[in-house]
Length: 192
Image (cartoon, rainbow, N blue to C red; front, top):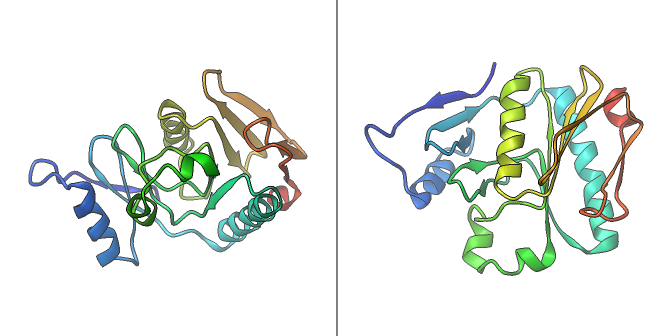
């Protein structure tokens, strides 16, 4: 099952605060909002995908604690992108100096900033086309590096700001390049 889109625009256009309140009043539902203002209801993650997500996130947290270069975010964090969309990547990371430019209120709610890095892990309910479009949206909004991991195909799509998408198969590891210096993701935890 893919995300369900609800277009309330002919009736009401939710402000950022109203969208935030809607999410807070319905914590059992994972909402996103696309650039057209449509609400997206995201299906829950299954066991295998949830386990892979937490394993990946753990690697990011450990690396970030050691380097202290930025701030890590899990899949429940919703970012307000410059195009107006509200998106929740499976893993996100922002350089500390960029994060520190936000006010405490901006940091508390849905941060109005595009992460420096995002990762999306395909789950059985995702469609490749929609996830690729979401990845391109991240890059179009200033994300510098993005990884789309498709465990079913053992394939990784690497998105870089200002460059064509690179598609690689059967990799053993992903390197953080100059965006995540010194970070290595061992893909054995995903390909198992």
